[in-house]
Length: 351
Image (cartoon, rainbow, N blue to C red; front, side, top):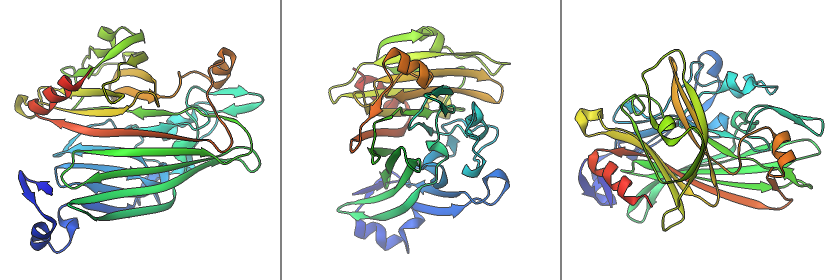
């Protein structure tokens, strides 16, 4: 049963009103034509609920923009979407192509600061987010009583005779939804063990994030900034930074949940964004707070490791590896909370 505009429709009922389902929900593929984004393939997904998001196919299927009823929920950087050929691999060049977005993936062989390990240079946050997706499949169809929308593709991080990591990413949602699920499967098809670090750079921004905003989460402990320091926001200024690591409690299904909400939006009913993921897969949340003019955002970034240089993680004996033939799977839900009832229900669901 499709729920749209406060009403329920069967497939037959809804189909009778429209010539094509794209009138109410679908996936629109296109190519950007201007500036440093020229030639970049994208897909716009819209569910009919007022929720929509932009998948950048040529940037590892990361999400550059998401919005609800015209209001964005994430920060977009000054340079915006940049085509993958402009990636600067050395040092901190990653920042030159960082679009922010709802999610930008860091990894797969380095997710932290730039370093050199065994004479191999690792740039800031790794290569995967500037990798082009292959074998892109878009599928929109009725599955039983539900109209489903799915994008699937593969992204490869490989060397001609060393590592060969394959990321298969599937993004799925359905008509009337206010969220989507991203499922990542990473397999080591190379012949040797290789470092494997993964972080989802999630970037809530205006208007979800202002000095009036609040964070809803269930902390076990926090390192670095105190909880009060990280969750107290100021108006945009010359710059106010901070961060650290958060370790969460899981709910009865093993999920960690975090929401950023602004209770003053939409006449005081409030709106926010949330993420939900299996805590065992991503045990560390990297925190980043940036209150600067034009760079007004926070990072709530689930990861499979602490974020440092690969060299330092190796010295500490905590650099993760993935073995030949091994497969790791990660699943994270991104969504919107609209109105006090949904925000309160989310809060009540926290362990």
